[in-house]
Image (cartoon, rainbow, N blue to C red; front, side, top):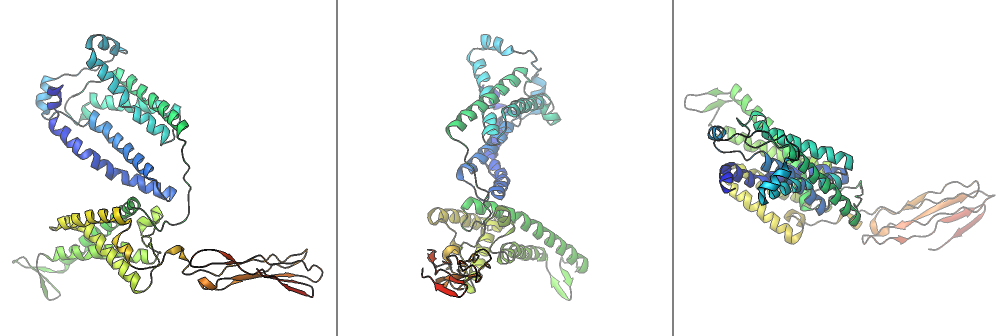
Length: 437
């Protein structure tokens, strides 16, 4: 066993090193889709998404990628003929002992998570999971037989028809476990809320930022390459390595200057201009239904908020490509530590008022139903400022039906404790009655 593992040393170590980090990166698009659909995300859902990606990559990592380091030498000294005898594992168990038993159990266990994930988290039916498990196993076995479809010059592992059976059995067991688990822990329904999340968590913010960074990178790259191309076409290149443009001489560092300038411009567009005009929602925030403005700010406080936020985001993202990338890493780690203790970002500390504090409490509107049999509908009125937001409804009934009345209006206070205003003025015929609250 040790001698076999040694032939895969370099590729195996590389695969094991990259595996968890690549899984985390590939989980981000899934989380973005889940935020877009459900508007919020539980920590258990985040863990489930990561484990699914980790497992999917694990199938590749442990079944296909670790290849012998010296293809020419390995193919000359090893020959793997396909094993096409069904139930051959029975003979292997009788002759191979513990090693054969361990191989059989690993083939079963390795596909149990696939059956569980498809049944529990993907909500697939039993009749869809079983053929999927079989087809995934067939794809793996065929890839091994063909040297990953010609990437490797020979078959470096054996195609075994019994693996198709044991892998499929593992998927079936995973389905059964998911059914038992579902009976004990029913699936919780996630409300498809329509509101914008104004106090997003760290993962929610990270997912939205990753979406924004894609747009920032595209715009920045386009502007930078386009400007450099136009500059070179419009300027005169001198033998000393400088450029003359509009009567001014520029060194070779002008390209770096353009890249840095358009980086700032791109960040400003996607992280300042767009959210300022859309109540704190960047493009990533729109997709995942979140706002970066956790408080309502105006004037200088709002300007300071976006300037500090822009500086922090650029420090922890763009500096990784600069000679000072260590500073970017320090800033990123500091932000995570700050969040663990404060549950917010440093720029969230800039003074403001909570969105739900009634800062702009609209006057309560009471719509008085002023009908007797023929009464006209009443209108509702209310003050415009939070603490004076009491309102009243006017109900009107005609002279023959004096039963019209106005519904209670509602006062909205900064303490968001609703209080009932006065009853509407009841009018019918020639009578006039004013009821206190």
